[in-house]
Length: 261
Image 1 (tube, rainbow, N blue to C red):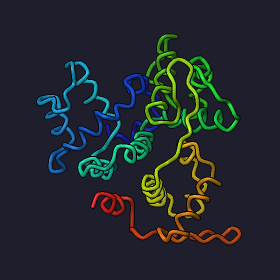
Image 2 (cartoon, one colour):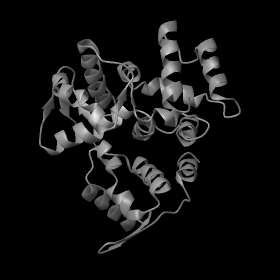
Image 3 (cartoon, rainbow, N blue to C red):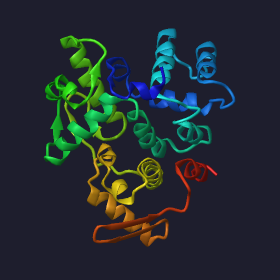
Image 4 (cartoon, rainbow, N blue to C red):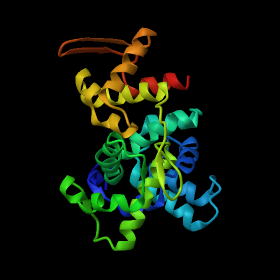
């Protein structure tokens, strides 16, 4: 099944397994674009070049990566960045966005629960706070693969909050608090290209809900665009309802190549 076909599947398995940031980076750093995804993942299972401590974890890493990514097509630029040593702190937010293209639960959690909770002024969140949101996932277009037990519900909620910690949006262990998050400049620019590639409309890029995954309002996005315009890293003009955005690279792939040149 192609990854895009799973975009509305609310998979508890992948969320419970976690972000796998270091593992994903290591696998993509060793990725061979000349080989198929199956061949690359078979080599991972055979050689364990990421140093997984158990065969079970190694198998889970391969299974999650197989579900989450299309490294030779849709997610090729993400792999390119890892292969050429993009700093992990810049790579992480780019990874988060790529994951959410195929992880309904994570995207739904970030946009429809975490961001509104952040905007409301809430300081501390707990696992149980997320339960009602998860029980209504079907109303927002999600399809669960099977009915969740109470234990699964709790583990998914805990897994989502843990992923938010791993990506720097939250901090803490039992009771988690909102962190002072700032999207790195080059990560912001990559996402700007990626959003433009998909939407092809400057205003839609500015107002995209995808920025909310990084706890950013459209006013925050505009402020960053104006700053980058001031430093001649892009051209951003706005007059009433007319928005013009001119970027120096043709697309996200070309910008990714520039990032690691």
